[in-house]
Length: 239
Image (cartoon, rainbow, N blue to C red; front, top):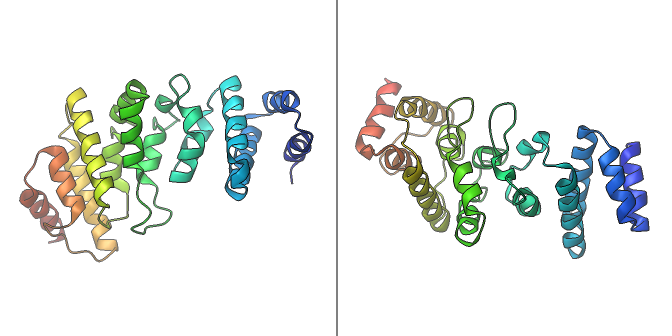
């Protein structure tokens, strides 16, 4: 274990909150990332202490700021749940990394476990928009990365899990699309890029594009294009 983590553990055993905070403030950005990762892991292992580690991590981030190196680490439902209080501080959902991506871009494109039960937390985020953090999340859902993709477009473009979303996640995603469409105009030039990307995913996974493939339906819905046309456009690429 690295020295800065050893010191963190030592201070945790002493429950010296003031010294813990000072240690975090004195540590480098990469050390902070490791320290937050350690607290997240401990929270997962010791659920009875979950609130303690979450509140501690939140206080650290509130004192020093939400580092850009943490953005692409918040890419699963568990990490989102743990860091939600920190993300709700100031405008942290809108913070971006060197690729101009915010947390939502990574949450929507995480492909570590391409299984049906590994779905982006659309419903969780939609609920947050209903009960709080509206402005920040509404801005974040509209933000474009360095490829000119919003988080929803990034999902359509890059998420390799083609399994149908569960009903509640699908309903939530459609609501997020509606929220985005009310705030900004859809960039139709991205349609062909996304069709090509999904075609490539279908080829790798030996999927035959069909009207009932949910991803095709979502692409048609997002770009206001008939599903039949979207399916035909992908089929043409296979020839």
